[in-house]
Image (cartoon, rainbow, N blue to C red; front, side, top):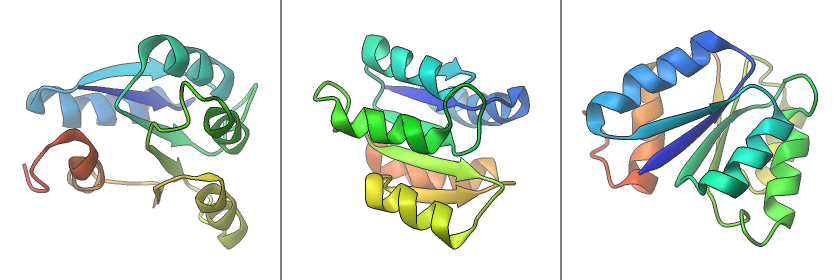
Length: 124
């Protein structure tokens, strides 16, 4: 099982990796939406955890591109953002995100959100 973490914050990648490695999930990282798209296409992760606000290509733009591509459209995407504005959340859900998590988030909350998509127990 693989999770692609797309975020311009190394701290977020560390939290995601620290939460998932102990339960046997490989974590692949990307630092912007374009890099995330490229890695989604080449790595075929089981789930993508993506920040909404990043340089080069933001998460909303990347989500839109992921859902238009037949090779990536079925990958579940959980959006993350410190900006939990209703417009941001509505747009992400409209484009196909399965969930929108506000930063800061906990490792436990992340695992709980990912559990149904990675065959994990909700509480680890």
